[in-house]
Length: 102
Length: 459
Image (cartoon, rainbow over the protein chains, first blue to last red):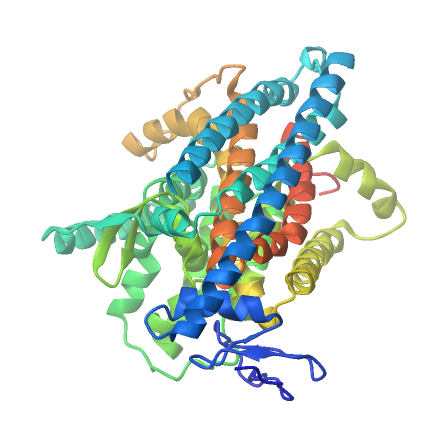
């Protein structure tokens, strides 16, 4: 399931690149998708990718990994939403006050 | 899921409220462009930062929409349009295109020399570059059919040499920059004879290229005008795919993978964005003040304009590539930088569209009656031609369209990022550098639009 890529997969000679051109640093750990060969920096991203790109080909273990990664993602997303909301409120009231003063 | 959708709807409502708020703010800047500084109720810095903040806030709002299926539904929405009238329509379009070209050449060389009454000038600038370009992104790309040079090239014989793949779209990039340079520095909008000569010259160059490499390859890769209209047309609600004509939501087709394919096409999109800015930038008082010492120190103005055009293009391309590199680092992805550069270039077309609309809608409406008069009597030279006086609130429309172009771009990039990355937070993070660049670019654009227009200095 986990693979350490030693060579960049990207075909740098080609002038046309599509979504399958990758550039993995030589010393980096890559979790490579066994269905399409796309490398990921994190295992949870690989699990998410398998669920999104190859939903009909997964075994039980991979489905379980996708569910776990998805739940984890939901959690970090709600944290992000709170931060984004905070930033919006800040921008809104910041401008409200500036407009009141100017 | 339902609570997610309800949240989405609530956020969209909030977003509209935000837009309405920025609309009021923009109105003040608009009256500045209309003349009369006293009507400006807020300082320029506040006006500019409001625009920048609107773009930043829109990104935050877009980031709340995390339902993949919802995003895909919006971008996938559409229905095929079919009809047997296409053949007739195509023939009619080709005839109209050829008639237009003939009118520009004949009236340009033989008609009245007054720019305000000459049909060639009005047809090229008001009818074609303002009017037709606007219908291209508001309705659909008709230039692909109307293009008289393509019709002529289709009739003429061809050597059908292999178009060198290595060259790609770079001739189109260079061609676009050269065309804009000629448009800016020469009195193309004032002298009908000159305009007709340039159109004829461009026509000869195009036909020679199509003669050597075949019209299909030439217009697909090397012709800059065809490419501009093709990208503008991707914004439009009516488009063409494998199944024929198709209706879709405006701008949403820009997220299609492989729309921009290769570094040359990325450069073309960036060039398109840069030339629309350059066009406005060189008529601002700030440009005049900045370049006056340079010209006074002995630099020939004829050198100044192309060099500034090239430097600006290099700067825009450099900033875009830098943003791509940052985006790649932040999102911690192993996708090649070229992949990111290609997927996030098409949203820039939406920004170029917003800027074009801001620039040319008023121009078109003011001069449309003159064009209509010239069309009915091409060789007459009336002393007075009708024009439309635009209402004072019109400037606000221009500013709103700049902002809306950015909003569409943010949304399209958001969708492209979701398509590209498996983790949603990763997709959102990948947009940070692009949003930073966009905020800066919005503020620059708003500043250019809000400046009074001065005559091109030094020439």
